[in-house]
Length: 508
Image 1 (cartoon, rainbow, N blue to C red):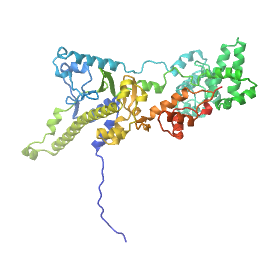
Image 2 (image 1 turned 30 degrees about the vertical axis):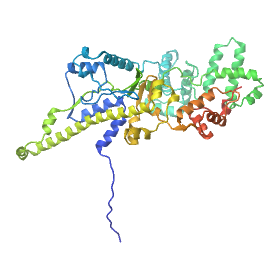
Image 3 (image 1 turned 120 degrees about the horizontal axis):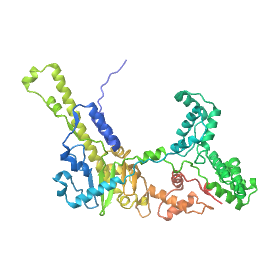
Image 4 (image 1 turned 135 degrees about the vertical axis):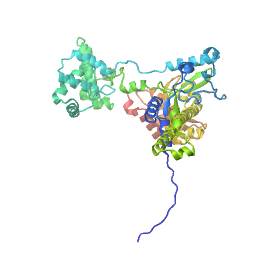
């Protein structure tokens, strides 16, 4: 027999508007304009505020200190000093530029100059572009040129070709409707490998080094001594690569009957080769990084840190449509009785759209104030770094620290700092860069993980390469600095820095 029971419980759920507010907090500045255009396209009650240009010309041209979203928004500029509060200022408070105090004009000018210094992507030549320029020197058929374009377009940022030939065949058949054999792909790949830079389109490090040695042999064909060193280097790379990679130098010297001096000379030659043939060319990742538009700018001026929120171009001023406002107004009781069903439906539609438009404008304003308040706290907590730009001055800071100070939930702070960047006097940084755990000193203060990693990196850079430091030795050196870090933690930080173990760092 089935038993029936009644259970009462509370359940918290987010409204659609709360979810939209969270999404607005999460998107970076460059996506905000697209989000606004999307809302303009879907909500007829939301429209661009077409104010006369004369009224806003000075404010729009000379500064981005005040938000262009809504006239009632707070200033996006915040002046932060340890003992001073923010100072509000808008050029709209003055009738003309002549009425603006001179020190305010200097501030505006410096803000604009600082914004102009933000690096954006230029017309940097990529490796793919450089290789395509050399295609004209290669005797390629139309089919081979298609294969060459595919290979060049699929090189890694380091200049390697990592795809197997079966994938190349399938992709060319599906996308280009051509059938090519392994032999044709191999022939085209060899032709590309003959181009500059040497080592490009190699399938692994061993092939990359071999290609560079082959190019050097062609350049030094008249120099017998250099050719002998190149021959030895080629022998080591092609037949003793595993021993070389694992620093088993004695086994190589025994196999080739080399003295320490001879091996050191050949080793120096191999070390002069580049493991990344694409170095010096713009990669897709670097191009994306160069196109980063900082969401915030922090600038030190007169011993004060100036903070402002960057509004990308294309963000219009918004307002609720006056026509929809009128249409949404509730009529008199008499008119409601005489109202036809279609008129009532139209009024309800207008009322909903006006409510959504008003909410969206307010959400943009709330996004602005929330982002600024969180950035303000980050600058307060990392003030020494923003003043001097020294990574060693970064303090341990977690999402919880910001959330407690700002009065927000940790998930809200996480959304705010996600995919956001700040332009400082020392470069562009992701907001996530400033969050790290800490290691407590003997004195009681804490040091950020980044500072600990920087110390480990400096110890290894200064070590005797003949007797590299073990993790235990690094642990002892950190202890001398007052940092209590376990050996396994040292190993973890070393691996995160992509530094090999002591045995693999050893040199003759």
